[in-house]
Structures are given as structure tokens and as C-alpha cells.
Length: 129
Image 1 (tube, rainbow, N blue to C red):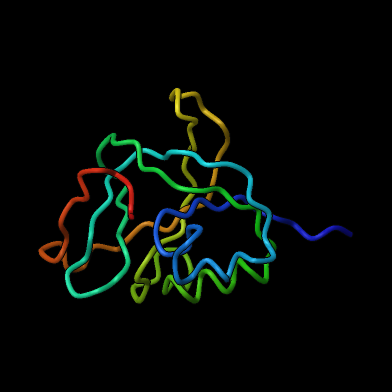
Image 2 (cartoon, rainbow, N blue to C red):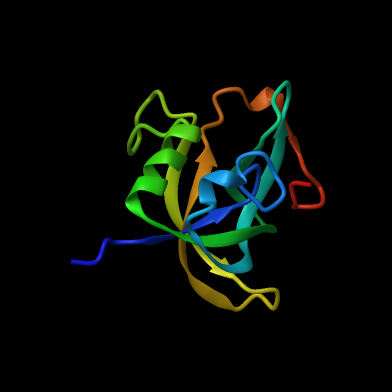
């Protein structure tokens, strides 16, 4: 039986060229894409926060990952399960779009649990660089 794989949208340190991308070394890159929401920098840390509020096109990359890699991503993102009060990020499904705003497919994405909204500053370019 073939292992179930899911599409994951990455927008920060998991993108190519960033420090955590090595977690995706055994995953298949599908495409560059956009999701809708808002991207923020977080004071005192070196990773961004995505919130599913707003209608900005947030740039990122889509990978097809296996269950082992998904578990590693969950660990990195501080995701313990749906609606867990200890989550740093919540994993949810959203629509991914191409550069012409056409729907591509549903992807999983990590959404920041904003316990400290005062530490967030919106990234105007909508791209973590």
C-alpha cells in the first residue's frame, strides 16, 4: 500500500535557500505558488508568521511530503494537534493559487497562533526573504 502524501505550502525558513529547507530534502517540489492572508515578522525570532486574515498574495513553495516528513515539520512548527492550546502554529488547509490568481489545489499550511500580536510587524512585500 502506497504511503499517503500531502501537499504542504512553505513560506519562511523551509523555502529553498533557508536554514530549515533540509527537512524537505526527500520531498518533491511541486511548484511556486501563493496563498491568501498576511505575512508578519516576529520580534526577536528569525522566522515569519502567516495569518489567514487579509487578502494579500503570500509567496511560497509547495512540496509533496510523506508522513514522516510531516511529523518533522509539525515538530519544527510547534504543532501538537488540532486546536491544542500549546500550538505555536496550527496546521490548516487553504487554497493555493498561481501567479495569475487561478486556483491550483488545496495545501496544508502552518498558521501562527497569535498569542503575542504586539510582537508582529506585517511584511509589506508578502515574501519572506
